Image (cartoon, rainbow, N blue to C red; front, side):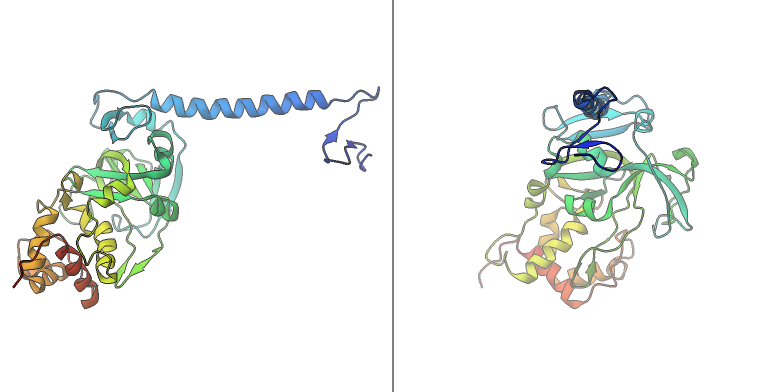
Length: 320
């Protein structure tokens, strides 16, 4: 049958068949066109992926190179490679004005690459990867798949159209450079709340390296231990510690090393003096005026107790 435009339509599958004046069907032509279009699209996607991985270098050639490591696609585990800023600028960019990023004192124009795109193209197992941003002071920001899906973080390449040499200094006070890379978000709305801990924006600056690792394996390193491990209070502390304490404190090779106090040291403190430990989290300078740790005055008693209970699971208590 024909529709009102004179195009022949197969009544069984509604596939249009255009008929010429001499009655010949152009179905084969249409099929060739569709095949060619799809093939070109697949080829472009494959070229995009291959062109990025083939640009990875074995050595750093500039201070602005982005270091990449961990489980990289088509490379042995724990490999390290480098990607130049020029190659990053060739990737699809996103532009937005950020108004709620604590690193900036005014609305700021951001240009960058979505972390999910870097993870998709570079991680060995994108669907299971934890994306980790490592800074020049050994601070680590962790981006689980759920966080990336909820918040779409962006690796910043330009601020107000400027390269890192033209970026503002850090807003925390020491007047440090925030390059060569940092991470921001087009917008951020907390996606969860545990006791008095709200989901926090992960917005590190001074980023030197992006690492990909198995998310379950990384977080299993700090999973609570012992008979209290499944208690709700302990699990709440575990979730908070994943997003908070893991920035600066490490368990072996996992986690940040900015603080210089490993996980088991925190556990020993929480076990030996739980009140002091809770008070230190709440207001570090009240316990040690030289402390560089940020305060968490918003943490209520239940939240502090959850953290204490969680860290205590790593220390075996002596029987009375």
